[in-house]
Length: 334
Image (tube, rainbow, N blue to C red):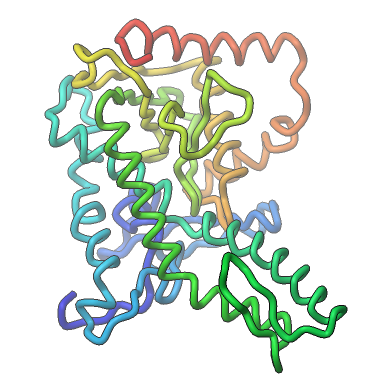
């Protein structure tokens, strides 16, 4: 890394994606379904080297390669290189307890994966596009060649709106990715105090998880309007086509080193697969990812998952979810 400047930088680690991919001659290939066109014939196979990446997303200003690659190196050395270690811990059915070091590595890996994707940057840039759009046309109407934003004077002289927006995206990117990491590190510190680790496994052959280019989901049982930065959120991450990780907030001090496992089958297995894959479809910025069987299964159930459920199916789904919660409470994870 010290002698090479990486330009194509992955915001979802390849060490994560390979567990949803097939291997061929030491390379890994994954099926991708574009969310812009949910059609079976649009599913394509792509190398994990060519998905979930952006040019220079983590490159920082600096005179040396070391300075410019500081953030890329941080993610690679602290999390990406460690992912296989935590993956094998999490899927090993004989592993019942974890050390403080293992537990913190699991939590920090999930939290940084949550914050480092481009979806946060895209949402912020979309907001700023609207702000600049209004400010730009207000300047045109009033005859001014500048406007003030957050105390800074921004000139529009000899610039189009598109040029102004592009300049902002380029100039603000380093600050955005650093802020993403800062927020993640603060949340890691809070969640490492009490989070419990829970792994669910789908037993039925016809039930498989998919993932996406924004794989970590969040929800909260205690509020209707869920803030993504709330340490009380449940964070979830599909680990492969059969395993899913849950970070459960506020576990008991006595049980936070337990690695709780639950094998699900039948109605609960189908319900958990359906819920998780729907979350990935709503999370995704560009692609849902997985094997072809799982993606085709999602498409077959997509219409049904987007319709209001009959009362009987609502009751079944609630029962399945409540079973997860009851088990989590039993082991002190909630």
